Amino acid sequence: MVDEVRADRRYSITRQTPQLFDEALDLYRRRPDKGYSLTDCMSMVVCRRQRVSEVLTHDRHFEQEGFTVLL
Image 1 (tube, rainbow, N blue to C red):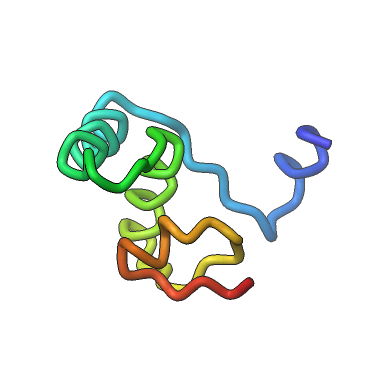
Image 2 (tube, one colour):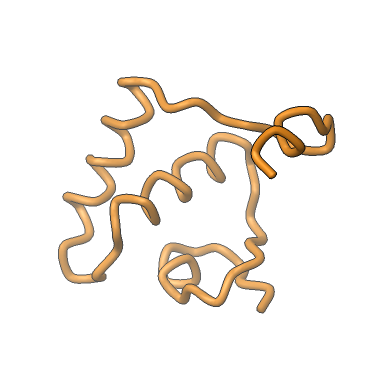
């Protein structure tokens, strides 16, 4: 499946960089009351960078952070 996704131009893969990790960690540290995971924070940072406001998820943490949750 990974090879298929990587080969399909409909998908965009964002590689983790030190800067991206630091941004996600900063968000994680600023939201200790929310119960966000670091993975949540990484996804939120990537969505904001790509100007994504609607997220296909059941995770209400995204709604708490201002995203529109589609499920």
